[in-house]
Length: 343
Image 1 (tube, rainbow, N blue to C red):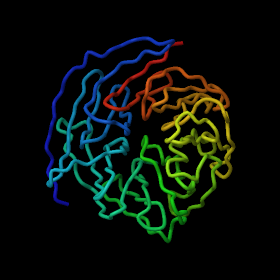
Image 2: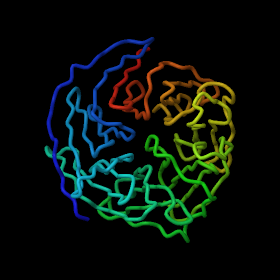
Image 3: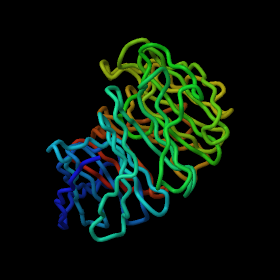
């Protein structure tokens, strides 16, 4: 694929605004991009990718920015990023879809194109790794199934799964590139979630070779309704959240949990907080009890596995990732924030 990389590479130190709200401290960073895809590299480093071809990392209080521009002058829009303990991978939406491999520790972070796909309907939403070698990405249908690509060599090569090996979609069913959380992998398990006219959970117990699909109880039937995010604490316990993007205040049938690897789902906190959610994540090392969820409606936290929630901030974000139990990163429109929780 013809392309040229125009580096905007520079390092600058941010004097972050730090303030306390209840028992949370926010450290804010200004980014010239809308950021829906972030990945924690280590205790001090966050990698991100966003709009206008921009990607980069935050190392302590330093931001390192880079940018990709196609040969025709267009700029890819990134909504997916993942890390396999060796390289970072960023994946663009739109036609053509481009997947780049990046060494996050190299001074120039030069992107290497490892996969591209051309199709009028190509649109990749999210990606993740199950191990250092095995990784996945999922996207909207280009045929009569969700798009699913896989690597088995640590991301050096990727292959798209034929639709004959995947469950068929329902007309009007797709996915939302809201927070890079439409897909989740735990060991040999991998799950994908959909929304729109139908909202379902696609599950594989053997690294994406065989699949089954389960109807979810999440609100659906309209173009912008359904599951926007999923997470699993282990092979059994998972959560799905979303709602209606066109009416974000609705809190009916927008969150559910499973205790059997996604075979069945039960609504939780119905008609209660939170409303529309774009990203949900289990808090590490809490036995699946503590959960946080974010959207442009604010930040929410549960301490009992999702049965009850409290709003802990009005600040709008698209996505969240944890470094450890007391530290997390959030991203939104032209902003990244590191938050620290104090007992």
